[in-house]
Length: 98
Image (cartoon, rainbow, N blue to C red):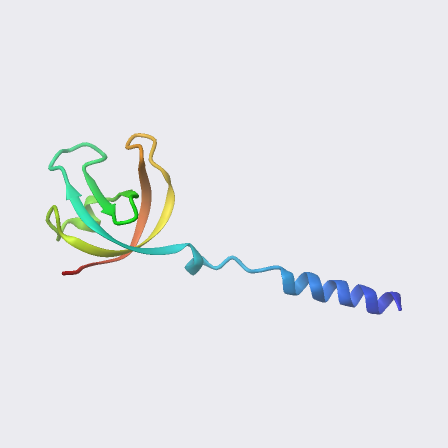
C-alpha cells in the first residue's frame, strides 16, 4: 500500500514538473526600426507595436533603414538601465514587412 502511494506521488510529481523550454521565451512582434545615427549604446532600437522598445545591436539591423517595418523574433535579456524603458534582447530572426 505504501509502495503504491510512493509510486503515485512520484508519478504526480514527474508529470507536474515541466522542462525549461527555450522556445517558450522567444517572442514575436511587429514594429519599426529606429536608428538615431549616433554612436551611443541606445542608437539602434525597434519600437514594437505593443509599446515596448527593444535595444538591439547594430549588426542585427544594419541592413535596415530607420522607419522600416519589421517582424522580429527575440528573447528578452532584461531591462536596459541606460536606455530606460528599453529592453535588451537577443534577435532570433528579423524580416522586413510591408
